[in-house]
Image (cartoon, rainbow, N blue to C red; front, side):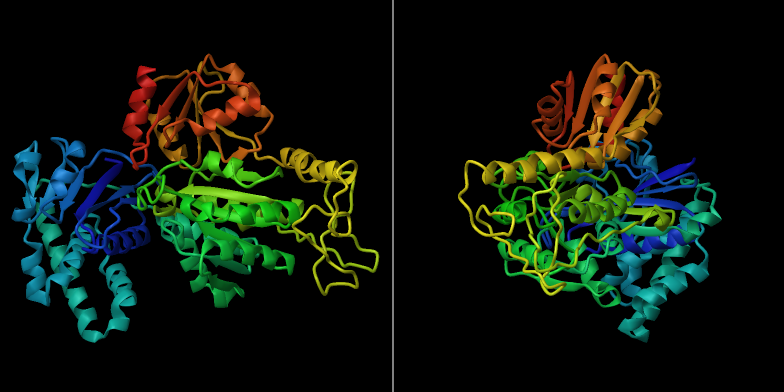
Length: 568
């Protein structure tokens, strides 16, 4: 066995996220490749949540799978909730009252453990989760020195008694796990990799935030909105270390306008929000467009319309982002496939916005930002920042008409010139104009066509995964990357390739060649209308042959994509 898929399932508010964080951290320190992702309801209590943890001795598999090797049933609704994923091979661990046997296809795979009784003996039901953590540690032979140090760091601030109770609960869990192993129902033989101990463990939100830090972000103004808030939280935790001003705005309208003001004053600013929040920012987006002020938007997508499914995932905001804002002006849109891409694309987005004085978007989704990844250290040698601010003089013109469309960007107080901007149509000096015959067309051409031409020269090419000679080409963008890639690795079909887009607008000129080479083009998207497929048709005149779409709020699983490939 090269990999184990373990799922924790229980009630909302039961503390499954705590188990996930502790387990993934300690397993990584023990030398295992670890990936985890959660699905949860938008309730504090009363719903049913689950977390998938994939543990491997070869490489991290950062994709959602249906297969469950071991299921920890921590509530009476857990098995019913996951019945479509339970197979005769699934080992089910839980208390008797939490194992509904009608959902257990193989009764011999049931392991009954009285977590609550053990926790109460130690100090209360609150320690149940740590007993579960202990079982994990035993199953994967985690050294005691690692578990003690990790738990001490986590719980020492709560006092000696609570710390000791947690250590005792963990030890009792280890003893339970050892007994399970001796019973012969579990046989885990993963190898440890010393190199993994030095890996980073982070979620998608942290990766996006770190990319902003790497780009020199020093101002963020946002209104909290799931699932984007993790970026704001992480930056607030690191604000003092990196000199970042954190502003929790009164609403999204204020947030975007503060971000524009920060760029005008010389800062590097970003916004983090979700679709509903961005809806309020569209007037500010147009303001950025006419002021030619850089702006960076991180939008963590979730299913709409309205509040929709606020804690679920989807790729439903691409067309909204591409067509939002009144008037016409250039923009760029990126969509990372995993945490590592999120880091580098955010860093790139900030510099691109600064260089070309345009709004730039980084589109993620709940699946990406709430997943935890163990990845090698990020190669910071790739990081290169360039600030594009000029020192003004008395002849300075903020909107000087240049051959390439980029005016020199000054900021107030740096030089002797006046940095005049206006949301009305303006002349080169920034004064209002209604010269519709000569100046207006030149300003539109400058803001739209010239800048778009520059963005196309600076485009990130799509990544081809699989054989160079193919008859079928899967096309995906953003977080579908890891799922499609793994499905392709598992299929026996040799004439299928995958084209992953991390930049979804503007498109690379190479795209046409890739698409025309295929006999069949299939777009794979987490939305109902093949939004990226529409981009391909509108921008390139190429209509995909088929669409694999999912829009129930869940990510694609490797199994369903593999099955589709083999049937296509």
